Length: 144
Image (cartoon, rainbow, N blue to C red):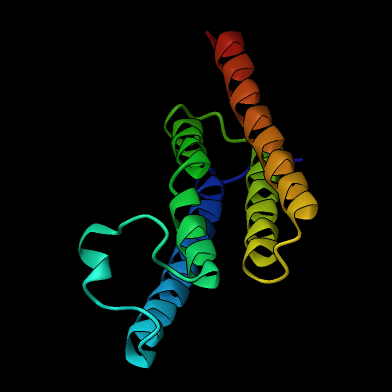
């Protein structure tokens, strides 16, 4: 099998950014809708006092914040794989698997919100993320 083009590792990053944009647009739509319908007051969004948003809106808001927690390690790891020239088919596959699990996690969190399924997907994606970092570490040690 031939070595992959190094840029192939970057495409999963774009897919994650697309997920963030999708969730952001949903959050925007729900917040504007809540203000328009009178369910929320625009002033709430000045300081975000505790307990003010309806549960459905709070779930989307919390999910959006979550996309800037663990995935930051994904972005950093993939960029390090790219700049250190450690791109392999294995890492490309792991990166896409991570993205697929995060999309599935988002779908569950923002629809049925079945906690056990959501946690399973979250921890599966965290495991894949650890695989990415462990593989990068081993490859860097080997190439010295």
